[in-house]
Image (cartoon, rainbow, N blue to C red; front, side, top):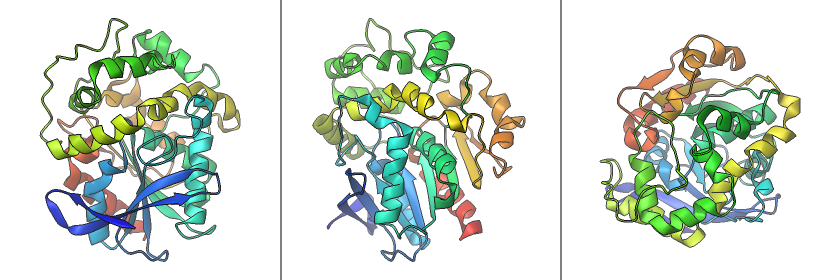
Length: 338
């Protein structure tokens, strides 16, 4: 099992790495910190797009110092984990990814009676909501970042609804055509694509115009919270794997909707803490602020903590932009249930 430090400025907390083969047949790369005993309280950390286990490096250090076992996988299709049937987005539905996580808990993290804490961001939050929906018995409490729970509606497929709301150039709609976004990202170069994502702070919708997402010669400065070393790590992994595995999560949105009709308007019956930045593009989707703050969110997640955290002047990648504050919120919440 190889060991690595969490980042260049942290030489005190060791993060270990291993690959585990799950009963789903998928091999996941895990980064772990803190007590190795399965009896230790475990926090499962789920990343989004375009991210990896690495997005949680700061929180892993803090959780380990607080006595928790922090486990951050590269989700299927990402990093050093398997990308099964990458040409088939249907293998990346919420059911498939949650299946991996339940198998991970069963096979690796403590057995069939094990409950874990979950902290999740972006796509990781969407998957975490599904984990809580499908298997609430496996989740002790959830801290969700950036993406609130919105129940499945029978009225319209999600991609169709987004297209009607934002148009064909909306990034999720543009991603649907296999190969098109990959070709655009290849034209721009992996490093520039990552810079564009990490530096995005507009509260408006993210658009991928058919004419292109800018020029390969665009000058995009790194935000202060991303170092050259961080960028090098992300770039090396996405240059190795490409982006298709992560893009398949978006391409499977309508398929997930088709498969989850039994959970239409279902509630989340797990204790939840929600944290978001006020510059996060997800916080400016039409109607979402009223839903979050005026009772809709609480209606469908009745165990939601009333103290919803909205961080001022913070964008989408909140756990990297404000690592100490997010770590403190996670620990203060989950210790209530430890």
